[in-house]
Image (cartoon, rainbow, N blue to C red; front, side, top):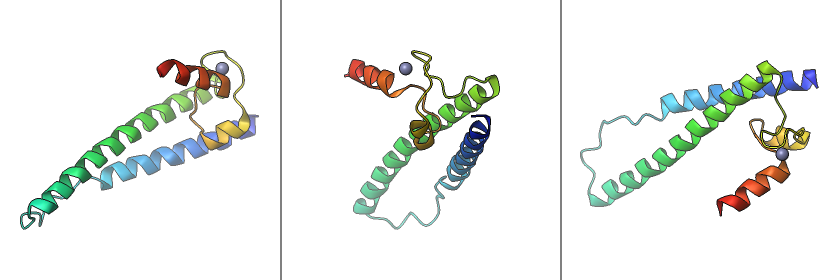
Length: 113
Ligand SMILES: [Zn+2]
């Protein structure tokens, strides 16, 4: 389990670096946009909205990654925040920063609806 946690830490750090570098490169450059007509402007408004949504997701993911890294440090990584059970390893591999076990996640999603 210890070795596994080290692997997850590496995965999380790499993902964080990926997100951070993407964040820097996704800043739009405001050159050569003056010639656009209405259609282009509509397109860019849509793109801006999409970029905004993506950005929010990335910020949320970064937050989760940082929390997961903190948990690795404190030795709580891989435990469900809701019931304290160990989270399934397959689930952790698919989503290294997941906070809840399958059961609690399903319960929480049911509550949200
Ligand atoms: Zn749980």
